[in-house]
Image (cartoon, rainbow, N blue to C red; front, side):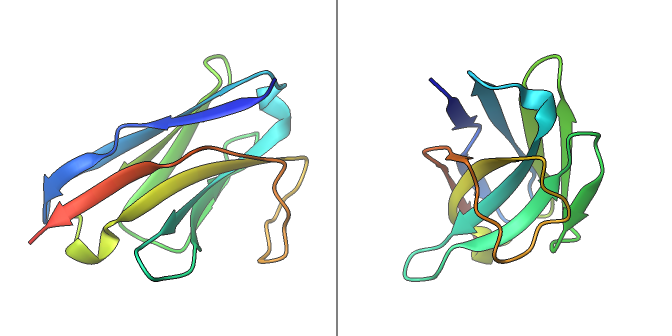
Length: 120
């Protein structure tokens, strides 16, 4: 059974940083691209950042960085200089053998999400 489990969310103040983790099990992790999405209340889910199986990344947020360790089946999302507008549920998703990603990419697996709340 494949699982993606996010962790590390919480309540922080504006300007602070937070590191989210996405731990995978039940799949050959090194074959997968992993992406992070977020969904704020009342808004559509949006793509944030992704990392290819070999570590190459793509991002739409300059303040965020992504890294992975295939030996640990884990991807980390570093959120820096957080703003209240970054408040959302953050989800990781995995897709096998796809790069680059497009808005039409269909992901094989999704995590349950972790809440990030940024206070002003």
